[in-house]
Image 1 (tube, one colour):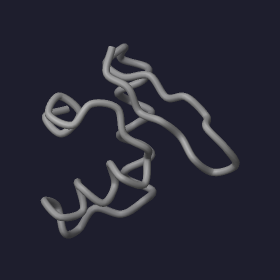
Image 2 (cartoon, helix red, strand yellow):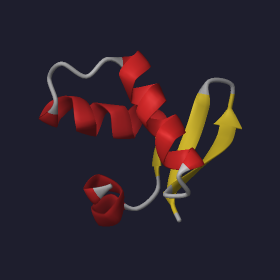
Image 3 (cartoon, one colour):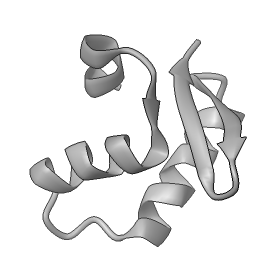
Amino acid sequence: MEILNKKGDLTDAELFDQLKRELDDLGYKDFNELLLRLEVGGKINTVSLSRGKRRIELI
């Protein structure tokens, strides 16, 4: 959440890279589960950009 506050909207790949720098043991599966929880909880919105790319936005 802090990363999105500071940098604004990011693609899922950019956000994953930023988080990976802080959390060495974060896997892509865990990352996707986290995004799903945040989206269901009303904290973020994900928008499909192109095949396999998503934009993550704070609400």
